[in-house]
Length: 267
Image (cartoon, rainbow, N blue to C red; front, side, top):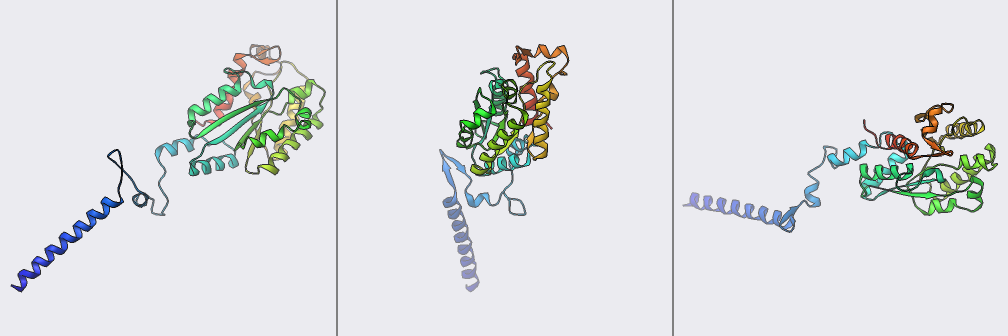
């Protein structure tokens, strides 16, 4: 009889334990329209042995696109992903940016948002038909920081400076003024420089662009040299990409393709 009672008690204990476990799982599960959603407690089981949450395949794909990015910009992008917010890019320059929808800046914007998704990355474009001196004198650099961009692609009016008498030395001083302001107000914003379009058979202008590139290298500033994608400066083929000294549709397409090859890694 004693053995029989012991067996009954054991069975009852087992039933109570099973019911308790089922009741706990039911309480910690959340449903939306009848579908179970993984809770934070359950997510903890979807972790690596080191305790880090596993990265999804989509997140791995998105991060693979930024392999060419400057380290500072890449780290900020990863942080934005972790925080679940959009990474904001600002493209700034002269009328060399082109017009919507076929200007290189707009084609680059379209390509970036298509590749990354608007939930991960947004692009704003600011165009100023000014010299670097006018830009600084009118405090337009404040508009750049007020945009709260994570990354600024800056075409610093070098061609406008060339055609309007702003010499190389003063042009670089003005660029430094802009960069200093960005550093002071928004230290986490990365900046990358890129020149305006090349010109066929120009003499002094290429020297001014060479000085811009050298300035970037000496100061550890990332520099996107899209001129390497254009025909040689003294080649008549350059005229296939320019109309009256400005990029035509073919020129903007060439420029945009270079930019997207850099910003959207295919490797």
